[in-house]
Image (cartoon, rainbow over all chains, first blue to last red; front, top):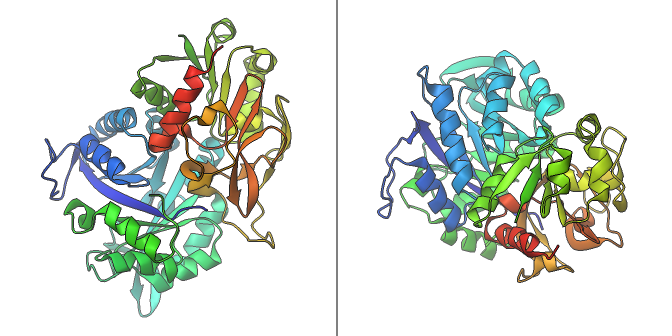
Length: 251
Length: 200
């Protein structure tokens, strides 16, 4: 049976992990490669690297990082953050990334999704969507949720699928950082209305939240950052609990 | 041992090279027909769309030599699919090594509709080849695909997504895995190592 995936997300700046990370056994807490290896050993099914570097060196440092991760890590990983062209994607895939995630650039230029899917195949194109509720409607936001758009989450998600995205990474800005659980109602609607996998993001605080997002939110995968980085939840324990609740996982 | 990964411009092949390196071997990337023919082991990767990948093989003359190779050959993902008779994706002919046609998953299958592509970790069972030495039944492996090879005489591992299909195929010296051993953690490493240890 296809397993539900658990995906730790690492924020990267200038080739280093940012946000505090609480691993006592890390020699270098800022080294994404070492952290990726640890997560892989602990049973993560996939990794996401979100690059927030804003310098001119960005492309080269990210390509170098991707190469170093691919050298060491034996599970798939996705790279996102400021990717806006076919050339960017080509370079990241050449260096060993399995998938790329695009967000704002897809909103600004939706045809990019078609171009990427045609050149590299849908299977490596993840479209990330950040949204929050405004007057009861889920509206797509850009720049980490700071800039609202006119796009309705569900309409945009359908368009993204039609244009060739292989997966959608949906972050609810209303839930992100709250540790109150995922936006399961919206997730369930996405999962029912679309026929591509949906990754849930934003709101993970407890093991129960993961169970809920797979059962109620019908998510195919769940992504989280701080609960894993600060060891509030161990991936091994999480998967055991999910298995107990009848959710298929890889153990 | 000389290991060649066929490089014909189809997707992420670094990962396979790195995986082999982690196992203590060196592989070279090549599209040189002679170099491929003289290798001890050949890996035939592939990510992307079938008909355009087939065109690339034809453009480089690789379509003529792969089916005649005598050493162990491992097709991975789209590589495996191209070793079949034909693919529904872009309605292209394949290399005709495995006697089966590749078809698309059916989202409205009455037995259980599925999301397309299948992305993630699924289980393999009915394991029948040296490729799976010391691999337990029902281990998880990583897959990303929208098309599949149905079960056939050459099936050496089964997977289920909506319906059962071939997770791996073998005919003589030709092996193919729909899954990515290079991305399938410790299980994938065992499978790759088993392939590298097959006697030529």
